Length: 309
Length: 250
Ligand SMILES: Cc1cc2nc3c(=O)[nH]c(=O)nc-3n(C[C@H](O)[C@H](O)[C@H](O)COP(=O)(O)OP(=O)(O)OC[C@H]3O[C@@H](n4cnc5c(N)ncnc54)[C@H](O)[C@@H]3O)c2cc1C
Image (cartoon, rainbow over all chains, first blue to last red; front, side, top):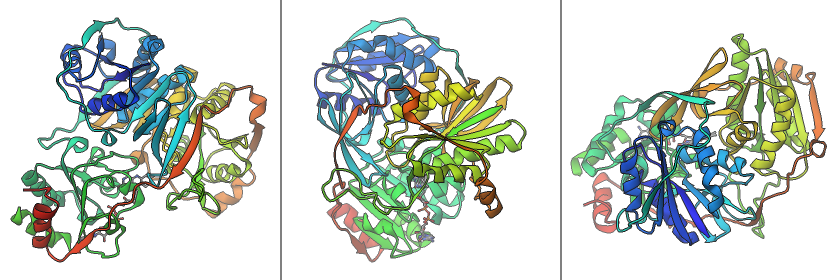
């Protein structure tokens, strides 16, 4: 039994979700290899080789992999797949894009977004926006799996000394090509990796008002998130969205401000350790999952909170 | 340009689904069903491309039980020209659904296939990508903007870090994200008209594909419940609790 973990990275650094995915691989058992496919990404391979518990890093360094397009990466993974019983990637937009394609190429039914490893072929995963947890057993020879990062504590980024083996590009596709990217730049921590998240909803009324949250975020070293309604209304960009169809977060502290608590939002944050809700409607469903609820107008509560921190 | 839009009948997004008493599956007795919201966005985009003169025909397809005809009629009322039901009484996995859709697409040879990025029942987020692999088409997932330029499409994708724009050769598979458009409601005259549109039913057994399940559902349970919380009276009390009780801020 051996597992291939597909590294997520930006050609310079390994993304933290890779460490949670290695943790899921640990729970399955067997040797763990990491595939780093990218362009001029030796530094990522070095980082991956240092990850605790990894036996080998496979490096495919080629301009074809610069933008991690699904067609070429899926073909590449397929070309080395026969060595593995399990192939894992984080359930990020990267993993969700690439792995189902690979899965079909291998004639395998993927197991999406697992939250627990029961045994080498049996896994738990949320369904219906996390309303229920399904336990599923796969009979496919190769298990292709995406991993919900927040459900697995990351392994140590150091302590390992894996060998690095280079392979050449295989099955490069020209079906799609990269045009451009607008990647949000922020000094705040990344939403899915932050210890504290403060999110705003429709109750914020405008994008300008998000500065009320940002002031608090900066005092707490927190990331800023949002509900779908706030993103749809254009208050903040799409990468802020927390929920069933956005990002899944599970920080030590999640503060929901002017968010009603629709099941689709709860799906993305209800595994946070401590939840605070600030809402002027005392019957808002968000209070049902909040450890501490404050019934108040956010436009009074937020400046006060900023003052007291 | 012909567009095929595969859609799915799912539990309405307002329903809170619970396990059956014996935890063998989810309880779908007497719950409201609807078209998957991401599929509504896919239909809307295809219909807009037709209204803009880019597309000539929009074909809605689903793989499911006979009652999925209801959602196909909705698609027709929203502007699809005709519909195809691949009928099966089994609950198929995404791979089997993608295989059935492959047959339809090979027969129809559309230039574009638009699907929802995920169905809100299984939350799998797989079918579009699998279909792209089986057809050897390019894929543009999680789309928030689509523009067709000749034999390719430029698609802006919602990714974790922000937005990415890629070009895919046609024919291609595109999956929709929430911000692609705001779907219309079907008007009463269009609902009436939809009843007369062509809806072709084909049994899945006639397709010669392997739809055997690869996964066994062992159980369905509720997630661990959270401990009940408290209401605080003031910001000061809140800060005190976070510092001294929860110890999550210092
Ligand atoms: C297919 C699908 C996918 C979805 N995916 C997601 C997802 O990933 N993430 C997500 O968040 N949603 C998602 N949704 C949307 C979800 O159903 C809700 O519509 C959304 O979460 C509501 O956002 P909200 O709580 O900000 O807005 P509302 O529900 O409008 O709530 C606003 C809240 O603000 C409070 N408020 C207003 N003014 C003030 C004030 N001055 N002071 C204090 N409180 C105030 C109100 O009392 C209210 O509770 C999805 C929906 C669908 C159909």
